[in-house]
Length: 335
Image (cartoon, rainbow, N blue to C red; front, side, top):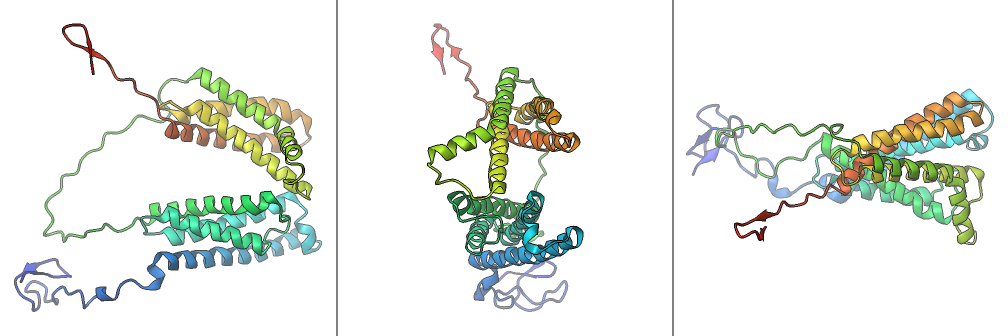
């Protein structure tokens, strides 16, 4: 019976030691394949470990952030969470924990996106039940929105884990037995910034982004009025955060409108971000004393969201290729 040496991949017709390097024969019992994977390597085991890591990082970084803010700002721990910037730092800590837990769950797995999403969903449930956000009440928006956001960031972490730590191939063939494989040179695709600018789509996307950003407060108030107060919040800070989310959604959708059915959606989103930021800076910067901070925030957020929206619109709605009609000798079309 032909066996393969596990050390040098030599093929020989004996169950004794390898004649080339002296190692023992390849045996499934010697490496414990018959016992199956341990519980840490199963899907639910990875989800549990990722969830523990996410929660542990959140609480550890929250204590560290509280200590740093008390040292820098003073006051009590309850007064810290009345500032919007401190709440945003707390949200950033939550995102860090979610990304780390999702990466640990999805690393080396073929379905890392799903595993990271499950970690994020359970993390969102625990966040609502344990009231981990001190500025959030149990409203309809927080009850359903927070687990969805955690699921999205956990899925991103799982996808990053799959990309960084790629899963092993299903079949491993020794190098001496594998046939020679010729490397195919993949042709380089066109640059995402190549091609024409769809000015009409860019104009429509920029108009939608500017209109949605400037009317975000009115849209939120209209939604509250239509819901009869059931979607209302009990804190001004939550109203401000929801308004920012509406503005971000408007810029994202504006980029999608410009980049859909185009081959260079990233370029269309870049132009939308440039036009939208110029208009928003001209409207909002003169209305505040901190014009430099407002300008920087508008530039970073608008450009990034518009480019992501343009790329996503081009991927979600690719350009439609019309087939060329061929006519036969009788003049009739032939497809």
